[in-house]
Image 1 (tube, rainbow, N blue to C red):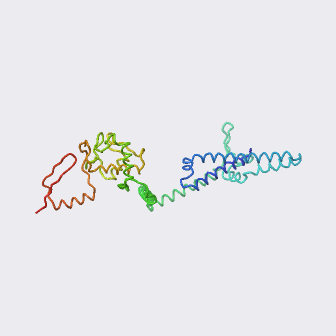
Image 2: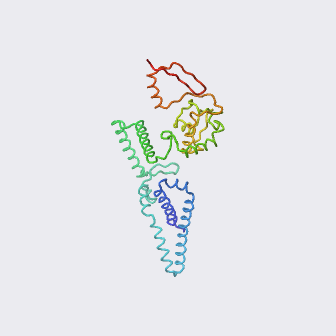
Image 3: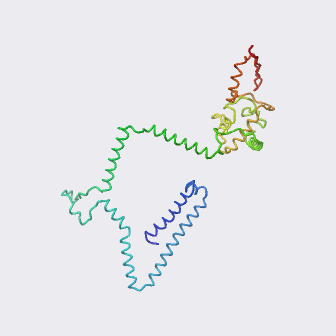
Length: 325
């Protein structure tokens, strides 16, 4: 395994294996390698296999060469030298053509008359690849000028808005294809016994220290009344669990410790405290939170009634209403 072709074959073999992994997995090659580290071992084994094949082939060729007589060995070496000379000949010709240089034996034809302390200068032309690239930049500049300065095609702001809209569509499509993904926009109140039991277990393990077992509140606020600091309802409670409370003095974010399903379960269990009577209720904090539907219904009732008296006791508001006569 001493030729450049051998090294290229080994590299190409491993590269093909990597590309097959890239195009045959949904996550992509790097994601798959990170998720399943054993695949690294498989790729290493493939590399060792390719190297072993090249070494075996080289050893067999060496054995066959030694079995030849002197004349046959000479012919073989001559043919091998000719093969090496012709190897990559097409690439070499293309390189020489793009470089545009002159052979050393022809440099006398392009030497200039200038002589600086014995140092002479050659009148070489620019390499063709450089000239072609320069022509491409001129064409690109002309097209860009006509498209964006004369015909006023899209600008950066429009391109950004289109990219954001496209990303939003992809997000919505992803949500439609993965309905089991729970977030603040689609989370729903869980009422099944098993979900509430799971939420209770999470609450007991993580939340009792601040809110007490009966939700009456300690370091944290009372969870049994109608007052909420960051809003009530499952969506607001889920968001508070996900992002945490007020900066510097509120509850920490639990998204690193609980998955979305667990946060939906414990949020639903927290809301089950509503209307219960704790042993030592903490004073109300925040403001009364009312569901939008309930709020709309309350406005309708308010049109037909006049509040004449109200009594506030702890976190419960009692309203005595008289109908309009």
